[in-house]
Length: 119
Image (tube, rainbow, N blue to C red):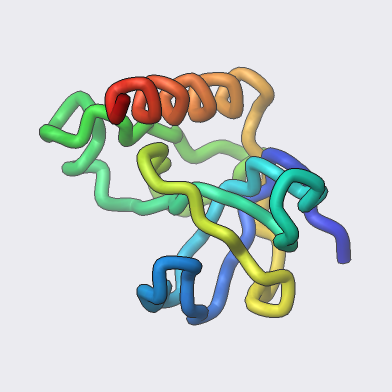
């Protein structure tokens, strides 16, 4: 199955490019072509720990994501926009739902702001 930008996917355990283990998480797919870097997908982690949203914590690049019929999340969540993960396609178990174009723009803007803050 081909996943698209904006899809929320469930990913099994895998070793990320920085050699850290990523253990069973939802991700928002933000790149699906692998043209810039040879990889299957890139995405941001989705977490139901809303205590770490930018409104409630020091993590100013964690964007809120409200559950709805399109994303099919069980809980209001956050998207951690300060780390981009390379997601091997064989570690994706299934697609849960999708986020809106407006949400994707917000996530990518938060990531851009994070990158600019590192310079």
